[in-house]
Length: 203
Image 1 (spheres, helix red, strand yellow):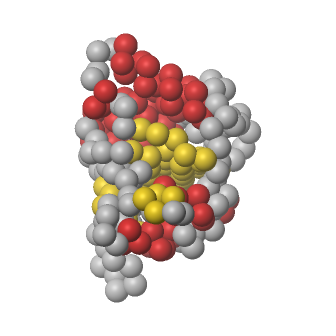
Image 2 (cartoon, rainbow, N blue to C red):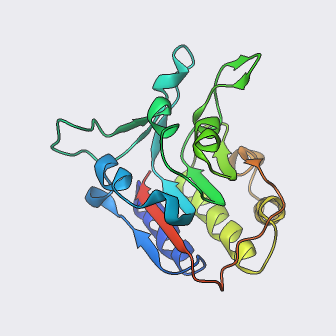
């Protein structure tokens, strides 16, 4: 997991309690692009990325996730769409707790965005966002989402329940309606079965 602020750090650490074990957590300056790409990504069933993102509508392959700065000539801290497609993923769920990750130009082949690059890389489902995030509300929604997953809800139902909780607590749609799930909507996470999970925080 990666975090972008004190709220997202709380998000990552709370979610880790509900995820399959063992978990790998990268926080703050440890959450570099190089460190992420060096992980055995094909062994993780859940990948949660709470960081900043950049959407480029003119050149969608340049849309990227923004990792912690690093003194390296190999990686530039921007994990671009064209790089994501080459990741060896088998994750049941990738959550992009970052701004605008579901945004991109529409063509005959679909939407060119960060979400689809993760699906092309092998992720079964991706949770993404359609606009800018507010840290505290996002952390609240994410913690609720993973709580429902831990109780056995399917991925789409877990997200729906978390959004309903936000609505019922008086939050306007801006704070929760921009989250969507792409890919397999119904499968559950087997949280009581040993399975790796990776969490990054840097949002």
